[in-house]
Length: 365
Image 1 (cartoon, helix red, strand yellow):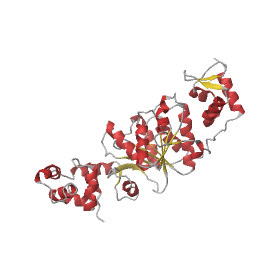
Image 2 (cartoon, rainbow, N blue to C red):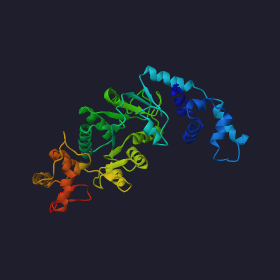
Image 3 (cartoon, rainbow, N blue to C red):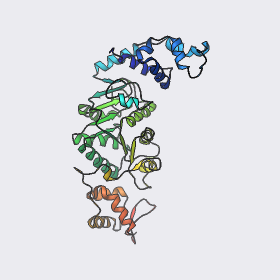
Image 4 (spheres, rainbow, N blue to C red):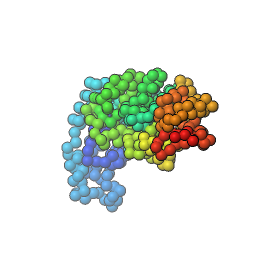
């Protein structure tokens, strides 16, 4: 079969025609090469078929297509291919085994993705683990435990290489010799953020760094949205640990929900702003995350609430009201049972969560 790579890149990069229209051209002309070599008249007729069923398009309607078609060139695609070869960048197009199913099931998927590293067999499940850039101790504990279990189960862990939960998800996967995919909002000439360059290289050693953007394209604001959409498409399940209401993690989660993916959100106190988004997701179709969903175990054991846990909390709070994060820091052995422990103690009337954002002993200050 003739190599279509350069034409897939050309079609992906071509401006002046929407993604929907490009897909319509493909449905009629079969390959991007056929599209490239077709006449302006044929292109216009195909794209206007639904609009004017009684004949071909008026000349005035062909002018915009003519402006695009008369200047089409493979020069940019050739430059991208040269950069790929020079920097060991691989390409995924809709006819690639790793991308066929993903592309077919998402009408907004780009025609081309670029990656460094190696891709695991496409049948291996992928779980995205994302969250706040300024994660809490509680969020970090949940992330480490969830990722440890995912690695134990042989699942690929995907995230966005950002600060906080994203980086921790990648790092924890690598610590346990798992496979992780990083999705970035720029070309593969740099890491985003730049301080994660070493982490990006470590990920590519055993997993892959993936982007919809060609080498040299910078991380402009709208490209974070594009990156988020691609991440959501690749994941079978998305775990959102912490997220504010207005955040990239929320955009990724909502994108995943629209694509019919399973989205799990980690509940937290309503007074923790870094979980305002994850709590909101529970009203938008996400499922509440609890430890049995990923079978916490292995390197991080879920510790059930016990009498000793409650006594430790009482000692910590004795005359000294604390936030949830402060309790986690002071009593690390509570591990992931901290919220269960605090909830049970609140329900039994031993402690109370007050408007100052701290837990208080009942009858205490």
